[in-house]
Length: 367
Image (cartoon, rainbow, N blue to C red; front, side):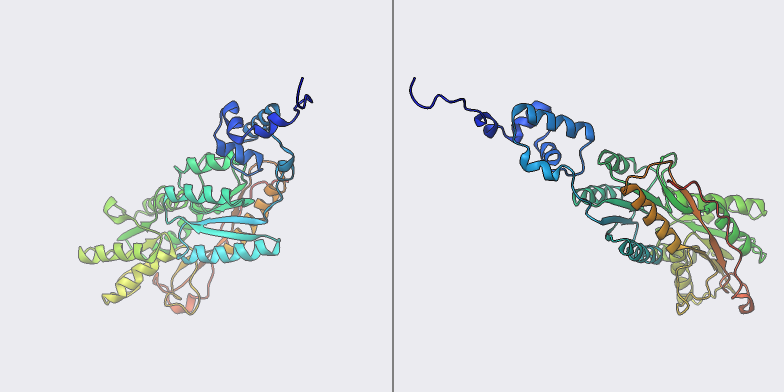
């Protein structure tokens, strides 16, 4: 025998590539890379199969050992609907402040009501290894994004909007109570010619506001025919377009209940451009309570939502999930108040009055 006859232990291992592991395990090379490097986006079952296959083939794993259980990034993902909407900009500011106090930074994105954009944002945040996500932009048919989160074992909390039937943490408000409160106040002025403008019906919150407006008007004996029910984007432009349509059609109602303050701002601005007086000619109300005292809408009658309370509950619950706490899904309802302005027809003398908070029925908190 000539040459080195020693066993060539380890020579085969050095020649085993990630592609070899992928072929044997029946997955893609990218999945092997994710599994070996401890990146999210791979289920525990697939990760275990890849590691077992790699060990069987002799693929060296020592250089991956420190990455198989990655340290938390201390970054949360916040997915908004439209950051230009004051509700979302103020909610995001509160989320960032509260997260930072807990030692986390926040990666912010918005979807502008686009489900494909949501899918992209979710995948990007997973790839960037955020520790969990706060979702305010869900539509009822955004199941693909949720499945992506579940596969990546990514904790998340739904805020304001939710997917019906989904067992997941939710922080929101009593949409039925607040919508009924504002419409009863508006129609309490004696208006019988009403129009409503709400957001997309694929948004659980907008859909519930629209349903409650219709049901409350019917209960009070005020007709609300289909041509008086409008759907718009949740921004000033959405309100502006509906108001302009009503003006062009010479079909202005006596009162308009808006599903958001942003929509109401577009309605009021457009009415003023045409010298139509609020509330003398058309009364207007909103929901959200986002405009400051110095705003042109300081006299808007609206429902004020506890945005910072919502942000705090969402961040705290998300961090509990990141830390491994289980338990039943949280379903928490934060209080709301009514801010009486003059846009509904109330005199200035009652502007300082606030209705008591709406029902606050928090669900069980996860341990």
